Image (cartoon, rainbow, N blue to C red; front, side, top):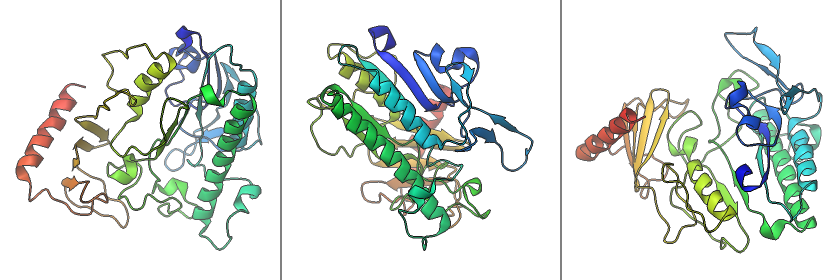
Length: 330
């Protein structure tokens, strides 16, 4: 997009490396404001580990390649300030691309009182904090959409809103040293760091006035599909590169993925149509699996409650070989 004349900015979490060649400015972004690590304290803007390596702590907030200090500003609101400033500099004369990656509701789990007070104090502490963090993100997103309208840019701007994974059960997200229970992936099974649908199936919104008709698309799509989709939206006459894995989500007729693969830790998964196989699924508190193979029919059982592996041994063998073939090609 930068090569096509777009003004480009990345705001928020980067988590793709801090070496000079890995930073946003080296990857097509004109400007960057955010952090390189996977998470940071929402007020001090410092990364620190919890658990075995208590000595690791460092400040991690940058504007382009220069370290900046903004504490004690709340990070979600700080990103809103930066995003509004970027949009204020834009006009219909030159296209722009803004990548805004909120930290919330990732740990550290904290939010200002003004958001907490929107929710009853009788709620469990972690749940109330989680809702408050989401409310802050929602406010910022709403202000940005309103700003697009005020600047008369809304009718020619594509907006994508998507999560990276489902809610977590990580102890480091909780306030009491127990598995975190502030988020919910119901009715789907599983959590972040697992390959059940609760960990990998997340909501997404694609808003493109005049290009996308209102409706719901319930077939699988992946984050890797955004690249070819956005390229075609930016230049309707273009053809996405053939050497990428994603599909243009707006192509007619719509093209579905024949196979989708996932990998996390020792777990592997493949989905073909409505059939999904997980090898070495992890155990979460209250959702123990205790089996190395889990096969589900997502059409009949979207919550992945029933393991069909014993009833479908041939399907398990075929799908397992597909996973092994995929691994060999990585």
